[in-house]
Length: 173
Ligand SMILES: [Zn+2]
Image (cartoon, rainbow, N blue to C red; front, side, top):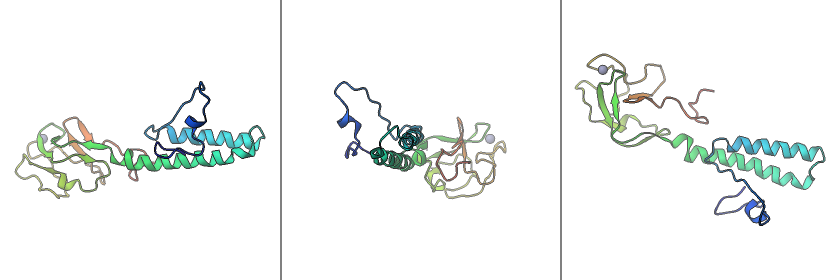
């Protein structure tokens, strides 16, 4: 496995012939880990079948480690921390009545959503930290998702998050 800072033992850029085509997968690509594991499995089978030499095992091992490292990197840099709410986004009931607004950007891994909202437009609407699920004071429609256990909130463009990203502990299997 290699990174820009630390090229790996099997760094293809260093090993490539001057005019040899190459194709690089980055961890930001959601399909990269599974694609690399598929490649590793094929190479492992070729070694077992005698098509490829036993000396290729370290490359198979490194590919599998790279796929795992990509998944970890994605958890830290992509999946769990994707911003879903921007500062100033308006919370509305499902009929569009404005309830309040986001005081800061919110990323999907944030646990403290309660403190991220304020400037409530409706007098009897919760203070930050409120954990109930009150309806809109004007029309009675929900602005916190009614499903038990859901923390999605309604914005002008719909529920956010509308789903947890793959790999997140809350993601439906
Ligand atoms: Zn309403």
